[in-house]
Amino acid sequence: MIKVAIFIDIQNIYYTVRETYNRNFDYNKFWAQATANREVVQAFCYAIDRGDQKQREFQNILRAIGFKVKLKPFIQRSDGSAKGDWDVGIALDAIEYAEQADVIVLVSGDGDFDILVNKIRNKYRKRVEVYGVPQLTAASLINEASEFIAIDKTLLLD
Image (cartoon, rainbow, N blue to C red; front, side, top):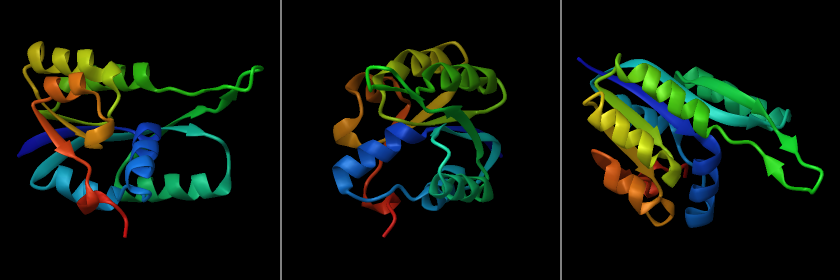
């Protein structure tokens, strides 16, 4: 059976799906599609923890689906801007699991991941499937992926 490892950039997906479709990503539908006839080696969701109840409920739903949820605290800077980014953590985990999986699934439109995808494909000789909102996914990331899978209405909550 094909082994898969999944890495989801929650903030990126939340905002790109919301901006494009004014709806929410359906993690259950995604799980069914990405794991069909595959053995899950690991599945991570990366999020910023604001500490509110609704967010905790959402995180529990993700855990019930089969994801491990990794959280970073929300940091408000003195100038009013916010910090909270999992790019390095996602990259480190993806490289760590690249040797254990046949397929790496990255769910993000962030072009910063194009170098990561290239390395996993070329150094580890693994298939990398990237899921993202087409209009808001970096062309460089799409080009580096073994396959780009558009997040469209079929992967959204009704």
